[in-house]
Image 1 (cartoon, rainbow, N blue to C red):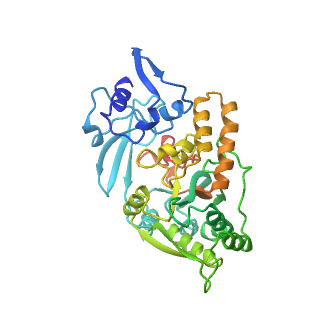
Image 2: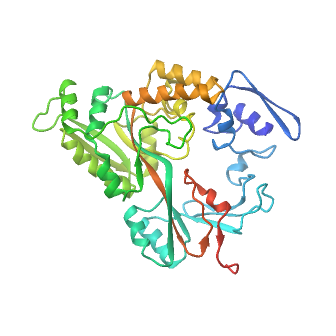
Image 3: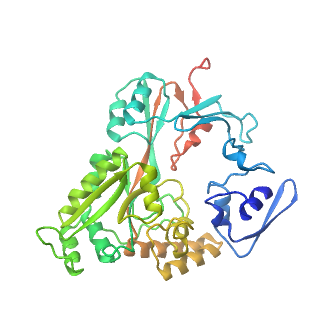
Length: 403
């Protein structure tokens, strides 16, 4: 523990999480079972970032070799990896929580959804989680050799705006877009009901969630009035053009096509540019966009996300404030909440942050995606959690010991 964090704070380990430990002054290890963090100032997010915040502990003396041969303390051990093909792990019999029932797991990189569905039908693949379109899931559900599990999730789909853009820096334009979009048919038809409307970047399961914030129910006439007042009259049916960048994900392509039609109804011409994910995400990181669509997966489960995504000190590369949102009041509330250790005192501060964000709209929070797992019947005891991660492998087992 001490070696890991000393190396992190000294810059010997490269990690995107390094910035969240900036309030750590030093780490002491008085004996082999005790670690003491000496803080520069109170930091209520520390425990989250030491556990569920995805920080890994490395062996004493670790160097660059850890990137190729990772060592951890989880239920499985790394075996091998082949870029763009597969990753293999095996049971860790010394796992502190008891060894898992699966001896080995292979994660296969499958190039497309059609192939993935075929692998499940043939039984050459056992599990696919959150990677198939709802239509494909409905089709596979008819196969007697397959099972489908689903439950409420915390993964958030959202639209992001570049607040340095001449058009989108006007909050009225962003609010008009929010009123113009109708999430209901997208949830019903594109997602087959496997999503829930979102009003915050935090999921409803979070202790700090505030759902009592301004909502933008579908209202075309209101959107038009706002755009007129903002100085964007319709000329030949078009007020202005906006370019939206997306990945080539099948669900995303369908979603933005619907959004394009809905925005056209209020005079906004949405131009869509789809890119392979690495290129798309690089553009988002570098501010080369007007609008984009992305998802938060896991990182939005704790209110620490507000600092990471909305504090003015977290513009890339220092954080994920990719929209260049800056509100001094929000900064002050986030800083105060971080220093306040008592959750009861922190909750109203985060509630106010969520109310302000709902007014300012650096994001349009679209929906929380349900977790959906399709699996062969030979795999059982699968337990989905809200985060939709791979924790189900802790309890998963094969129906036949011979397999």
